[in-house]
Amino acid sequence: MKRSRNVKIVATLGPASETYDTIRALHEAGADVFRLNMSHGSHPEIAEKHRIIRQVEQDLDSPIAILADLQGPKLRVGVFANGAEELEEGAKFRLDLDEAEGDAARVCLPHPEIFQALEPGAHLLVNDGKIRLVVDDCGPDFADCTVETGGTISNRKGVNVPDVVLPLAALSKKDRADLEFVCSLGVDWLALSFVQRAKDVYEARALADGRAAVLSKIEKPQAVEDFEAILDASDGIMVARGDLGVELPVAAVPPIQKRLVRKCRAAAKPVIVATQMLESMIESPMPTRAEVSDVATAIYEGADAVMLSAESAAGQYPVQAVQTMDKVAIEVEADPTYTQIIAASRSAKGTTVADGIVAAAREIAEKTEIKAICCFTQSGTTALLTARERPGVPIIAMTPVSATARRLCLSWGCKCVMTPELDRFKGAVVSAARAARAGGYASEGDQIVVTAGVPFNVPGTTNILRIAPCDERLIYSTDPE
Image (cartoon, rainbow, N blue to C red; front, side, top):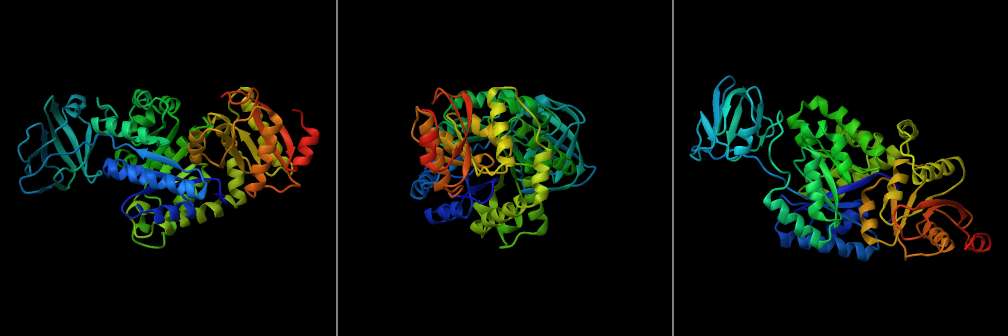
């Protein structure tokens, strides 16, 4: 499906968007990737959403990526005898392993791993940071705290521990079962929650075993500190600003977002900016100006994708939310300032033949009347390198591998086209010209850039760049076999 923009849109599915008609409408409105939140829904419910997405994909002949977002370990307090208590600033409060119901002085925190890692001075944040506790003293089964920021604490509220690396794996028992289930379904991306170090990513990769690409959610301070190693281990990144804004000062999140986006682009790995992008559209058909500016900022920074969470999963206006993102993206990308910012943030990376070819393809396309860059790719690497260049013309990613086409739906600018396996370069050029014309990116009198690798169908062999006419008669009369 032809888009009039390069940045991609990720839409989360939920109660407001689980029927065929709504999912199809979301895709037609602009959703390129659908997110399945494994925190909600049974396996049969997830399987039904997956089936519907693939049906929409088939009916519209349009590759769609499916991202399964694993829940990760959830840290929560126990229950209170009165259901809730009011904690006053300056009061003392204990967390321990005693399963007895809590009161105004203490409550159970059934996570011994937290107590093993705590040190005096560490902070504990309860209920999305609304309550802040500082540890005065701690042991293997307790933490005596002072209330820094008071508020109402109630049953099973979440706990964040920003100051220490917790001896917890990113994959819980539930996550392992969910991972195996969604990989057997055939999802394209796995989003890994609670990442603290690269080791967490390698564990998920081993379990996925190539069946899905692994995307790391950056939502903890430890992940920001170890970002280079995590990026190296990951196929993609999500800047999960919700939890990141709980565990870090909110003022620190925008510069972190900007840094991470640039590092992902330099590494030629897709990055999603997520959380609260159009939050007011859960209940309103119109976003706030600040929300529109937030989406625009992520696009100006060069993010591969922007994401809707509750707006499309549980909101009253899921299709309108996607349409709003689509309109903002089109407007931003038409701004000359956007082109200047993207060009200024381009940095030379890599020393391989493929790096040189994609850089040359972008340079040629921008300085001549070239209408599109058509790159043949098995694994998707050539398309990712081309996307890193952020060319001013469409990127048509041609691949015989359906999994590659779907995964590239998350990457900036990639228009994914399925093609038969080819063994002749002339056939590749003809296929590229046909795809450019069929997609409306070029006409018969135009020229395109074609990049490919010989021998064909071997990953990592990009070694040819050809300026080709879209007129097949000229291709047959001038191109070598």
